[in-house]
Amino acid sequence: MNAIQPEPSNLSYSSAPPILVAASGHAAMARALRTVEASGHRIGDRMTLDEACARIERQPAATAIWIELEDDGGAEMDEVLDCVGRNAREGRFAAVVSSTIALIDAVSARLDGVAVELIADADDVERAAALAIATARLGVEQRFSDIASDQNAARLRQLSDEVSRIAATLARLSSGPGGTTPPLEAKPQGEVRDVSADTVRAVIRARRLRARYFPEHLFADPAWDMLLDLLQAEIAQLRVPVSSLCIAAAVPATTALRWLKTLVQEGIFVRRADPHDGRRVFVELAPAASEALRRYFAEVGGPAVI
Image 1 (tube, one colour):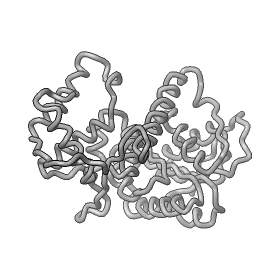
Image 2: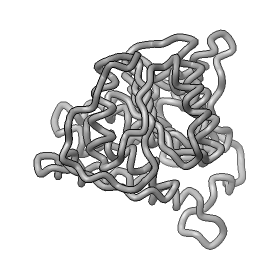
Image 3: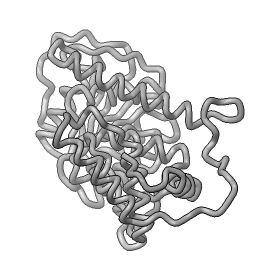
């Protein structure tokens, strides 16, 4: 059933527990195996999606699992994702789910917690970093070989900066009394004035226009872009699925997903199940975040906020 054999490797494997790999197809399996091997881990087993749940339940705790999805596996894929999410939340193992951008909505609908690293159309460095982040939660030693080669050094530094920035933001958002940033619940008194959809759209358009004149990565601010997109949707009474919000973030999908998870974790964003489609969730502003944004626009007044 699993005809793929890992290519010979000169890597020296760590003594950490093995990684289980499940994939939706031959090409997906080959790519997953390369990432796990390059991380310095040994591969414990390889399986198709229909074998995954039973195999996961038999595996001892504290073992990592990598799920690679290139096609929509329907109910079978949903069952595997539910199984992975449940076991990861219980702390049995670290977990990474790698999918295509086209599958973001279906995959994120099943993974509603912070225990699973979700990546989409990720490059080699992003994939290696996702495994490192996931296993670090369980104290598993992580080592890299060809993934961290010289040609990827700049990308690795960029990704490290990105993860550090998210962690710093998370720390500031979590600060209580005495912290440098007031909690979101601490709202000024007074009536909240309405913000027009045209005002928010103008700000979003102005932000996107910068890419015509400067490299887009100079202005990457996915948290703010997602906040603006959700405010615009709220005013227009529209619902925003995860895939649309990732596009609005104007950064690679994996980066957007990391920020989305952080902002949901901190209660700034709220996930809502689609009542008509069990394989999709919507994202909206939490009430306190909505009020904070509206007060912000009221305070800055007429000039465009970019």
